[in-house]
Amino acid sequence: MADEIVIGGAKPDYWRQALVPSHTPGGRPIRVGPAVTAESELLPILSNGEAVALVHSHASRYHSRPDIVYVPIRDAPPARWALLWRTATETDLIRSFAHTARQVGPSVAGHE
Image 1 (cartoon, rainbow, N blue to C red):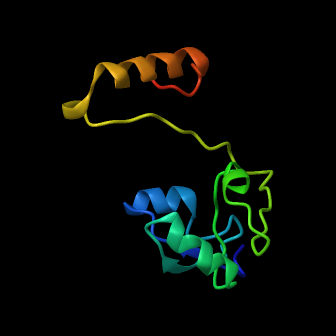
Image 2 (tube, rainbow, N blue to C red):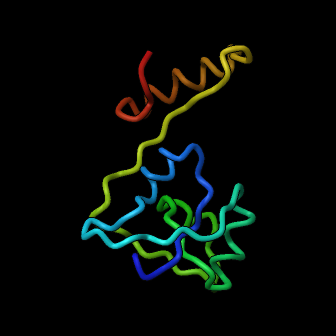
């Protein structure tokens, strides 16, 4: 990946470093290119060949396009997801959804 330009934009910086490190394991710098803030900005950059992007595997299912190739990265650690919401806007519906998510996927649903 060090030969490619990687999409930038993840904020704060420690998120970007976790998603796209600044150097390969061998020490080669990874060039960070255009910064995007939404997927709608990402897809044209990829289809034009301006950069590459690391995305979760479900992206290929929801954003399949003939001009974009998804290549699995087999040696990367698995991605982790979590539910979050503003406590000031918490509702019974949100609590019910979180409860169901914990039952369906306890290893990824977070802590009480």
